[in-house]
Image 1 (tube, rainbow, N blue to C red):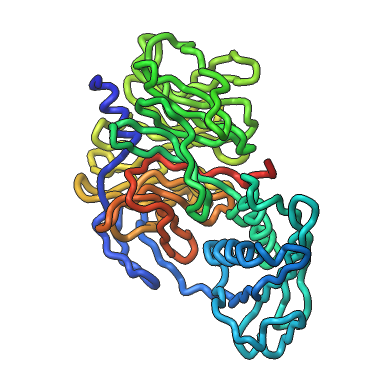
Image 2 (image 1 turned 60 degrees about the horizontal axis):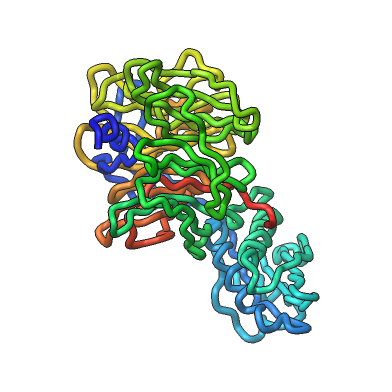
Length: 456
């Protein structure tokens, strides 16, 4: 492995440690002052309304799968971190008639009822969201589900869960989505895998028997771009969601390592990094549809790497070594290139290590991981662009935490974590600070959360 590759993997994998700052798990946290920057996280005790899921009923054969559908919906609603889900229910509350007075005495604010009916070669799910306080049905819908043997069955149920979230809160859900990431095998190779938002349906996407990095979803969720060393030098490939190769990005700059691709919101432009080129290193864009039109955005005698677009496509955040090899920082610039400003808390001559930026789908936040000093481990940090990025929120308080990626709801982040029990994929809720394990016991890296996925 060349020195250049080692330096690039150092930025890509970013396996260091946690900022040395104690944080309370629920309420106020300590703050660590940097010049002009307030670093810390306070999780306010936010109110979560109680939501009950009444056992789903079935008809015309739907009773065979109604418990499975109910279990998926219940888990999705817990994972949304927007409700206190009521698990066990008295027999008196299970039936066709909704007794709002009884539910109110139990403290429920929302109630979800459902019936699964057989319909041809699939099913029809009838859902109702009841407002217990006002004693009325807030919303209802009919959702077609494929057969339970269909590959899209669980995702179809996830879409209904997202509708319940939207009915109750007005905000999007994130259940109907998948997470792409790399995983280290026993042979020392890295391949790309995908997993559902609830930790089910782990599937291998690539089989290159090589080092594969930086999978990123297209805006419609139908494709993945990634970097692989399968030919001996890193090049960028585009595959469909099953791993079928669609194209190889041509080596338009000749020599150099092609890495860290990301899609523009238009879906046809790909931004990526070329490092070590004899001509010019830095961040470039390429028009996938026209198969032409390489444009240089940023770079120089340093690494600019890991670009990420704002949702409106007007801005790029990226990682840079322009302040020194030992102090990588996060910057942002116009999407067509130009003057860049620093988002991470860099002070000339100081330490700090900040990498792997990802732009929130709501457009107001940029997440990355970092540490303040030259030792310790990484935490997940979020810069709020509405206040100029001068306040960083720290979302994790233990272990090692790297490479955050936003869920389509703009509220959750997935990251590669390390705890006393081992390695794995973890999810943190930006609002409550709740952390859950998505996939444990695996050496994972560089996750990327898909947009909400439409029916297959």
